[in-house]
Amino acid sequence: MLEAACGRRPIQLQRSPKEVILVDWVFENWKEGAIPKTSDPRLGRDYLEEEMQLVLKLGLLCSGSDAATRPSMRQVMEYLDGDVPLPETSHCTTSIGVEASSEFVMSSPPSVVKSSDHSMSCTESIFNSGR
Image 1 (cartoon, rainbow, N blue to C red):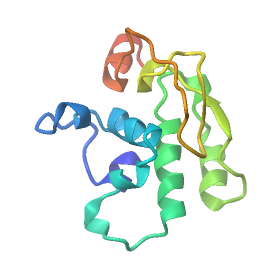
Image 2: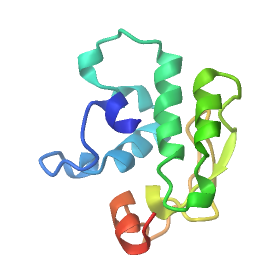
Image 3: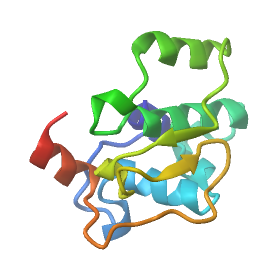
Image 4: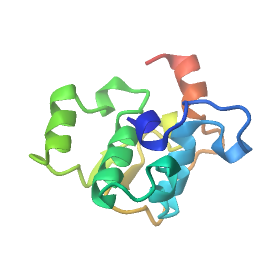
C-alpha cells in the first residue's frame, strides 16, 4: 500500500538518509503532521486527501513486524470500504522506530512518542526477527 501511495520502492539508497526506508520516512512525516507530503507527486492533487491519509496510515499499521499487531485482510478491507473506522490507538512495534508497548493515535500525529535509544528501522527489525 505504501509503495503504491508513495510511488516508490521500500528501500532507496540514493535518497537522503531520512528517506532511505519508506516505512520510516512515512512514519516520521506522520509524526510531524505532514503525512500527505509522502504521497506520490505524480498524482498531483487528483485524489481525496482523506482517502490518501487512510491508505498511508493503514500502510503503516500493516507494516508492523509483529503479526499480532497487524490487521487481518478482512479488517483491511473493512477499513478501505469505510465499513469500520481506522482504530484510534494501536500498539506498534520497533518496526517503525517505536517501543513495543507504546501507544499512538492513528487519526492524528502523536504529541509524544516513546522512542527507544536502540530503535530499529523496519528493515533492521524484519532482518533480525522476521515477519
